[in-house]
Image (cartoon, rainbow, N blue to C red):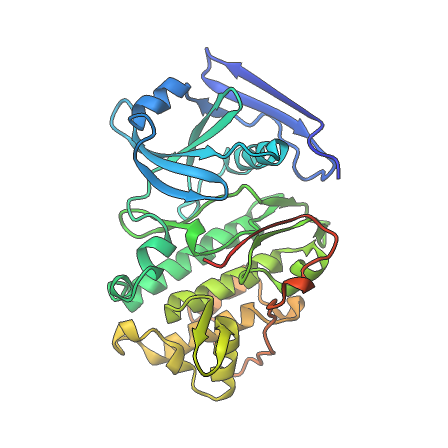
Length: 357
C-alpha cells in the first residue's frame, strides 16, 4: 500500500493559519486547504507548564492539560513519533481534515495545531470530566453517580454525534474507533466524540471502503474485522456495544469462575433469549430506573450489534428508537456478531488494534 506521496505544509504567520495538502492512494484521505490556528511550540510548552500535567495516554501519544494566554483551558495531544512515522503523519492529517470545519455539540472541537520538527501536536477544548471510560466505567462507586437520566443524556448525545457524521455531512464520515475512552465529557457531562485519527470519508456512491483493519477489539464489527470492508454500519456496531456498556456498567469482556470469559454482547443475547434483559441493567442504579425504557435501550444495543450488517439500523433510526419514536416491542432481533478469535481478523492485512476499553 502506498503511503502519503506528498505533504505540503504552508505556515502563514500573518494569517495565523495552517494549510495542509496531502495525497494518497486511498482517495478519501485527501487533505486540502484545511485552516487551523497555528500555535508555536513555546506557546504550548508554557500553557502546559512544560508538559507536566498529563491527563491521558494511549497508543496515539499523551494528552496534557494547559491554559492559554487569556485563560482558556485546553487539552494538548502530543502524537507519538514511532517507527511508522508516515502512519502517525496520516493520523495527524486525517484529524485536521475531519475536524477543521466541523462544529457540533457532540463532537470534540479542535482549536489548532503545532508542528515542531518531527513532533505533531493538536489542541482541543479541555473536557472537565475526561473520558467516559475514566469517569464512568472505572469503578462501581463512579457508576453509582451516573443516574439513569444522565446515562440516557450521554447515550443520546453520542448517537446524535455519530448520526451527524454519518448522515448530515457530505462526504459522510465513519469514525472507526467508537469506544468509551473516545467519548469525552464536558463540565455538564455533555458527550463529545473524539479521536478522529482513524476516520474515513465516504462519498454518497460508495457502498464500502476496503481498508486495513483498525480499531479496538470488542468494538469491531465482524464483517469489518474479517474482510476489511468498512461501512457506516461498522460504527453502528461499535455504538451498540458502547450502549450496552452504558446501561449495564459492565466491561466488554468479563470473567467468571464457572463460565470463563464472556463478551458483554453474548451476555446480553443470552438474557434477551431468556426474556430477562432487566438483569443486565447496572446494579449501581439500585433499581432506580424506568424498566420499559431500560429494556428499550438494551434492545437497541442488540439491534446495533446484529451479525448481519444490513439488519442493523441507521443512526437516525437508532435516535428515534432511543427517543421512543419507534418502539422495539415487535422488532425481530437476530444473533449478534462476535470476534472472539483473533485468527479470524483479516489475514494478511496490517492491523492497528488496541485492547477493549
